[in-house]
Length: 105
Image 1 (cartoon, rainbow, N blue to C red):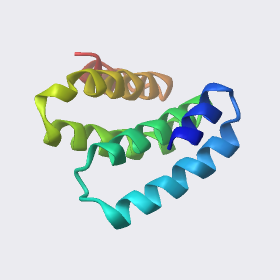
Image 2 (image 1 turned 180 degrees about the vertical axis):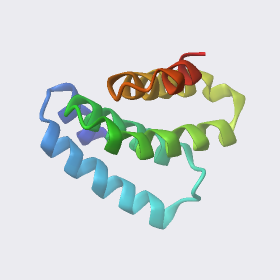
Image 3 (image 1 turned 45 degrees about the vertical axis):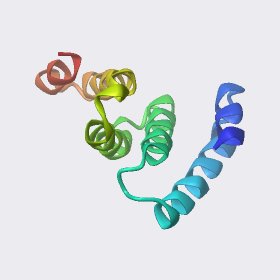
Image 4 (image 1 turned 135 degrees about the vertical axis):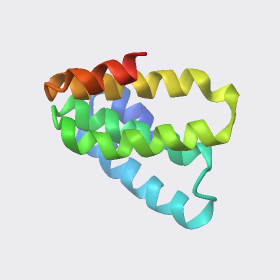
C-alpha cells in the first residue's frame, strides 16, 4: 500500500487505484476482515472515488472502513473521524443533508 499512497499523494490517481485494489484483494485473502490495514485501503479507495466526484460509489468503501475502525478499538478515533468527514462530504455532494449531518456529528 505504500506505493499506492505515494501515487495518491503525487496525484497519479488511476495507478494508485490499481495498487489499492490489488492490496485490498491481497489483504482480504490474508487477514481477518476487521484488520485495520483493510480499513485504510478502503478509506483510500473511497477517497479516490470522491476525488473523481463519484460520490455514490465512494460510500460503500467508506462505510465498510468506518465499520472496521469502530470494531477495532477506540484508538482509531482519528481514522474514524476522517472517514466520517469524507462520508459527510459525499452525502453533501449527493444533496442528502440529513445523512450529511449524521456523519458530521
